[in-house]
Length: 119
Image (cartoon, rainbow, N blue to C red; front, top):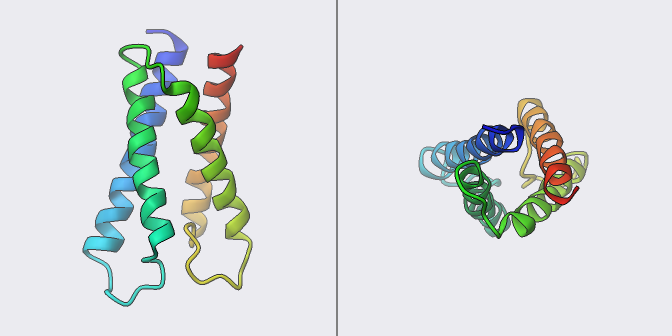
């Protein structure tokens, strides 16, 4: 396996795994009146699952949509970092420091993968 395939595998698993864990933990098992349950956050989870799967499968076979998936995920994850510091917004996607750390790790991995794909 090449380094690009290893990063794609690990990063894809991390992105899809976190999205599924958040969906199960907050949407299925969470409180019904949770402020986190917004259409924007649900769409963000769906974007993570879809594009994360493309990154994951890139580890096994070159996916042509990887050139769309990586920049799109970088944009959504960067927005989450920005949104984290807006304390007045109650429905922030990242609402705990551990989620912030995981998001930062994913951004670093996405930047590395972006560099490998385009250069």
